[in-house]
Length: 266
Image 1 (cartoon, helix red, strand yellow):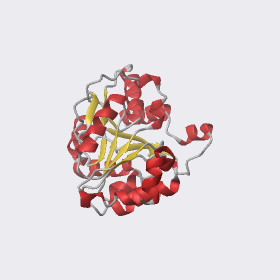
Image 2 (cartoon, rainbow, N blue to C red):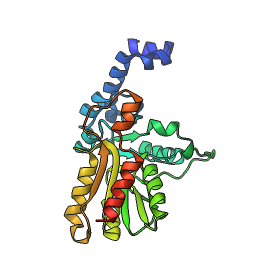
Image 3 (cartoon, helix red, strand yellow):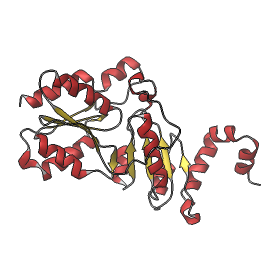
Image 4 (cartoon, one colour):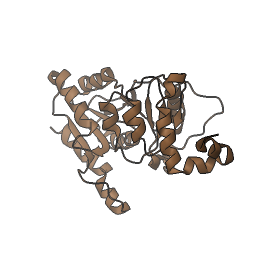
C-alpha cells in the first residue's frame, strides 16, 4: 500500500489537510480521463490542475471558494469553464450542472455571501433542476440602463437599480452566471435594448473580464449605443489584508450608483 492510500485509510481528514498530499492529489486528478472518472476537488491552490488539466478534456471539476477573482482570467484564456453563483439555491443547482458536465469546470462561491443575511434561503430536501451552463439570467427588467455583473456583485447591482428606480430610472440587471462559456446573445440583447451599459465586478479594472465584455458590446452592438460602455472594478493594486483597506480597494455601492447616474445623464 502506498503512503497516500495508507494516509487516507488511517486518517482521511489529516490527509486532506496535508499540503504535500493536496499537491499529489491535484496532479493525480489530471489523469482521471484515462479511467473515465470525474473528480471534485476543493482546493485553494490549483496550479497543477490549471496547467496540466487544461490539456485534457473530460477530466475534472475544481470547486474553488476564493474571495477575490485572482485566477479567472487565466482559466478563460485557456478555454476552461468558469461559473459563479449568487444564492444558496443557485449554488446547489449550478453545482449539479457542473458535476454532470464532462468538461473542466471552475465553480466559484463568494465567501462574503456566506455571512450576508440578505441572501439566506431555506433549501428544500429535493434537488433543484440543474442550472443550464452558459446561460445568463435577467434578474431585473428595465430599458434605461443595463447593469451587467455576476456572483456577489449582482446583489450590488440590484440594490443600485432599486435606488435608481426611486428616481424614475428603470435599469435592467443581467447576471452572467457563466463567464466561459459566455452568453453573448443575452449580453448583446441587454445592450441593444437599453443603449447604455454599466459593467460592474470586484476584479481589477485593468485586464478584468469587464474590458472583454465592453469590447464585445462595442464591436457587435456599437450602432445601438447612446454612450460608451462604462466599467467599475477594483483598484489596480495588490489586494490589501486590512479590512478597512480592502473596503477602499473594492468598488463601493456609492461608486457604482454614481457611475450609473453619469451614464444616464450622458
